[in-house]
Image 1 (cartoon, one colour):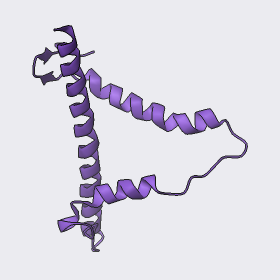
Image 2 (tube, rainbow, N blue to C red; image 1 turned 90 degrees about the vertical axis):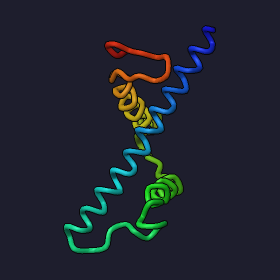
Image 3 (spheres, helix red, strand yellow; image 1 turned 45 degrees about the vertical axis):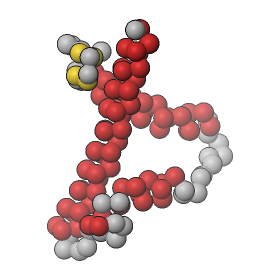
Image 4 (spheres, rainbow, N blue to C red; image 1 turned 45 degrees about the horizontal axis):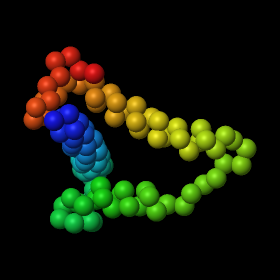
Length: 109
């Protein structure tokens, strides 16, 4: 019974993270389309129907870019600071109370 509750919490957390990441990607697409209309030029509409697949192509492009290596800096802080800021931004979402299946938070974390 205890493992079932932990599994439900984990599944709820994964669904929350995926929802946030996908919504941010599509809000970025909306912003790019809006800026294209404001500047009277074509927006990001090359990938898929009306640019629906553009956030996924942007993610692939981001992960396949060339790596740069700092010569005179601390490698640990250089590579892990984006990871820490990403985890902190996701932890802020955990503070918001939500309701998923049998998990009910009254005041948040």
